[in-house]
Length: 340
Image 1 (cartoon, rainbow, N blue to C red):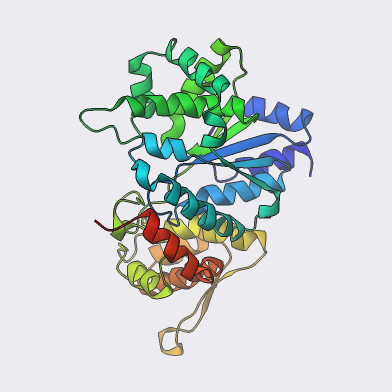
Image 2: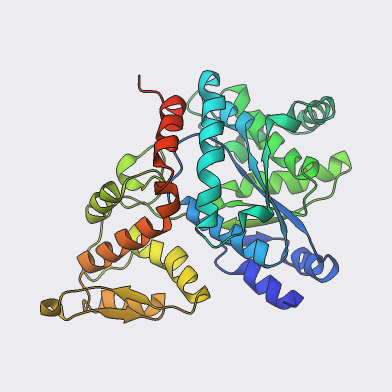
């Protein structure tokens, strides 16, 4: 794979890349650049995570060394109770690898890192103090506002969060960070502040959000909007069946799943999407790409329920390896998210 092919693979499906020219030069000069994504163990992971997991697979295929930061201290700064922090880390550490594997990634090539293993070092803490002395409260608030649950009376912890995320780029020794579009202001902060400490600025890559089944954003805090990675096949079927989907309108979370995830995986395998229907409703249909499915939805030549049924089957298939570990995951989940 030449540098242009690698660049095209890295860029596909992204919302924005800050430093595209830097990325091109990186791919031309470095045979194995490094990248990381930070995942804070807060709410129960959902299929919206597939979007960044798919990008992790792309980066591995493009020759990157990929580091997954399981950011336990970040979770605490974002209001995860300290008493369940280690349990949530354990739950994420168990459920994230098979989820990434389902996207076609070789998880043996991934490096998983626990945040507190390096973020409590003397050197790291000193750099946090240094960064706090050159960063205004206003800039910290702006950077954290779309990521951290600040509320009406923000805690100091929420302002430390973006400083640590910026500094992680240096301590993880990476060339690029990836995250969702809500991370943009933190990425900008990192590029502005790290050079003031004598560290280089990094390339910042953003992936889009997967819309919720109900509403605009799939959220861990809104049960009806999301499909958790640990949901049973029956729960998945019920949730997708109840999802928003107006006939003739492809602007919904179910269709976004096909656009951002399913068709990307299918096209990488040179496969078509099979929609199974009984003969009395016209028989099975095949779609080569998302645009063909979107056109059929707009023309009302396929019913929303047929699309939903196919989505349920596809999601269940992707989660099959997680399903095989259900007993252990449910034990970890009960510890991580105890009922009140």
